[in-house]
Image (tube, rainbow, N blue to C red; front, side):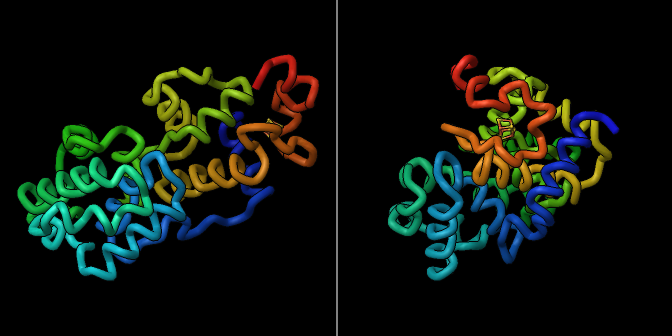
Length: 224
Ligand code: SF4
């Protein structure tokens, strides 16, 4: 078994199944959530999403026709409300004007990722989150947690480019959407529960044998 798959197995052993990790009743809810969670916690993004749902502004058509000023207060819990309201409008305009108001139609597009990346406000992590979790397409999501854990494990550098990291995963594990979803969810869980930004809890971590930074001494020496 290669190292990337071995790490997956160890994470699974530590945290178990993460099924339905990204909640959302519709594909568009997941896409909205991917924008709202930029630079904030999922808890804050979720509150904002619930406000949009409560006001009926959770469909492409509704957001497309909504006055941007009415969107802003609803998404305030997620922060950056001016910017994110504009991004949500951009996503809704794209969905209604190019996908007949159904984001799932992006699956038929010859270049779905490039198309999403052409929308202002959608970067690589957001695009891949939409493709993987909303559209069930095999794109691997790389986030700050991925960088933290895999750089500590000595597999990447903190500044390794996004696409290089994604390729490292996709070339070492089977192309399986459920596996991609589960792996990313386990990475997030590990970063939150154990491989924390400051003072990681290495005792009991099943990746300890692989990790050059497993001891407190090691952390101090390497200044992480
Ligand atoms: S041993 Fe510590 S630093 Fe290494 S992956 Fe586990 S929690 Fe993170």
